[in-house]
Length: 236
Image 1 (tube, rainbow, N blue to C red):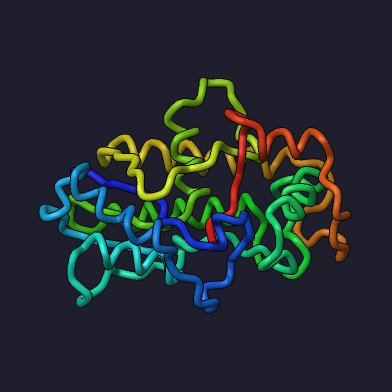
Image 2 (tube, one colour):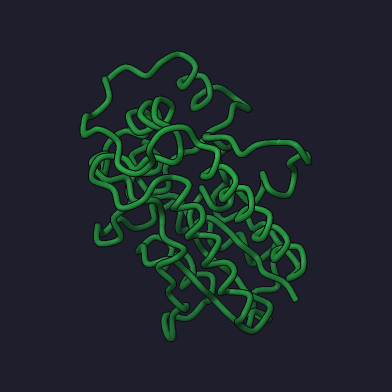
């Protein structure tokens, strides 16, 4: 049994690296994003899919509906697959959020946010765990961070710790798992997050309510913008 997991198509927000973690904002696919959905028909046996799932975000739901080839019924919508809650960074440049994350780490919640990066990743993997209970084959349309973490899980070395920044996930490019591998990946990630939380110094939770400086430090800029650098890019 197989699960195909992919990032939604491009939007104008994601093209300009603006973050969007609020599903109520009506951000839809760009023309290029719409056209990219048609390419997947040459990659996956979509007519054989038994279960379609997406996040609550319009761009993910729109991608899934176009891949399904019919407007209704739509995919199963699971909020656990949603993008990160960016709090006060909502709608702003990703580099502002990246600078804050670089200074504060993945266990702290950004100002105004309901979850930290690590809490968001755990939630997304809980969504994948729930998807395994549905008929196979499955297609999960989600956001780039989840796909990027899955690539990292598959390629990591035994002693490698989870980074803050991951290589950007391509639009509408599936990563596929059989059920045993995906369950193993979820279990391993839960264990890593629990260990990281237990060993983290200082209090966790909400960080001081201050927006970052406009400038991004050089190390963060290099990770986010340079070719082949590790990137945790926005998924608007």
